[in-house]
Length: 329
Ligand code: BDR
Ligand code: CA
Image (tube, rainbow, N blue to C red):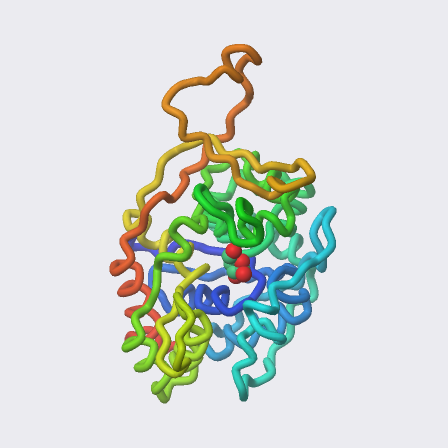
């Protein structure tokens, strides 16, 4: 952890677990959340904007600027994950208030550019969604890379996909955009499915959060209850995966994940591998390199392991701790 808060911008598709990421980012004292940008993914982009504003308000975020971004991927059509995140993208939790704030009068790419260039110290960018906005930013305003410390993105998988057997949803949704991100020329951490699925808040903690009188903390509990790690036959006392929130934990506590710097490429070919993040873990060059010559390699710090208890505690302490209570007070 550092002493001075880390300037962070989150690009999200809120989304149940994006909401858990936002709650943490607002309430952790080590994060200076400078902006949030929205993109189509888990639900349509207008739904993402609404959900994001509601969550920020319940978290006590003040006037953090929020902008609407791309309504669909660069090439693919938009394909929501409503079967996972509910009709409203927020788990259809009853009684969620409509936001009282509006998004800024700027598109997401313009807000990203403005906030990255305005930050006195380099920004950490945390995409927890399809990478459409980020690709558009990098192609439209490449000068921003000079003031980006690192991109920590939730996406990809080393071992096993979810959208397809090999592709993770965020990368699969817009593979071309992910390919642009991977060649951004800034340090990148890939917080993929290999660690994403493992960080689960135990049922007793979820129960306590759901019983809280404080609206942001209670929302956190309701959202977690929508993300049980396994089907719960009774359905009334689930644990809950932190999902995207783990990527934000990795910003404030990078020592909580084990990473290896490895070449990563996105499969753009049509067919069963489209959207796969091909991570090269071979110990030595293979026949492809020997016969085909060296190719340019883009190295990424790939998260291979995570200290689950450490991230659960980090997240809980921030979301329901004194900072959380005063932020919402
Ligand atoms: C990713 O897809 C979305 O459903 C989640 O919000 C997360 O960002 C996991 O594949
Ligand atoms: Ca997401």
